[in-house]
Length: 176
Image (tube, rainbow, N blue to C red; front, top):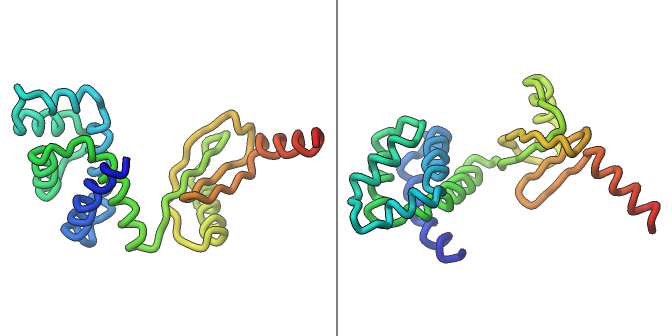
């Protein structure tokens, strides 16, 4: 997998330099392109010798739900012409990592047993930013098996205050 990461890095760096202050909007359309590029059928279509670059470009643009800006269109054409569609998900991941490093933020996934309202999420964001010592871009995912509480993943750090985790701790303590 290191090969894909090595291929993706120059694309992510060049894109970050090209978009400058517009990194947040770029991240949105790049994630959409990465999601489409992750499809095995699309990659098989793109790898077919009977298909040209314009056909692949047209297909991706028609499937992608996001309107690509001019630099996004140019980026996609370059990726297709160089046969790097399979690297797009890794490009998006590296771009997000570089953007976060540049802005001093981190992506965080909050797993919750129940849906969080906007006010709760705002309060939680403030508490988590103090806990982790940096600004966080929160993404919430529902996991009913947590029973209650939350589980937060920021990079390789995990904060688990869920009822499921507490039950596991009690089970371990009782069986030890």
